[in-house]
Image (cartoon, rainbow, N blue to C red; front, side, top):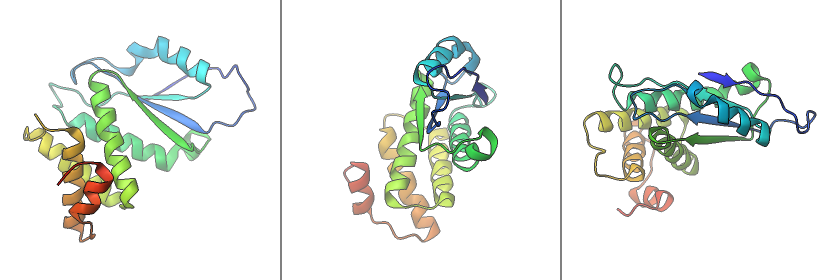
Length: 178
């Protein structure tokens, strides 16, 4: 990953309470976050928010959904380490992506939102991400909504861990019908 360097020219004494995780596009095949650095630096300065860009594992060496795992691990790292490594604890982590990065940002956002609303512990979130990755690598995601596959992954991870969550609970939180 790379922290997009910036100058905070607005209010230097203003505390940083948010960070953006930028997930680049490129068809899951190419590009790195530094290809977007020009407009990311401008956005960073205008918003006075640091941006962390991730160079996730890309095809053909690392086929989808390995990149999703990298993004999920980066998100979890940010939750655990921003204060220690970057000097602040963000109240918000904003996920932004373009093209294939948008797909990864959506899956990551939905997994985080659903798990958070259900009060699911981290180890189950990680298992749900693995289940999602496995489903995607077997082409089980193709033609289905990301939200539906994420909901099924969370449900399955809860069942594996013996954490009681009903289909009704997951359906209500995910807005996916049973």
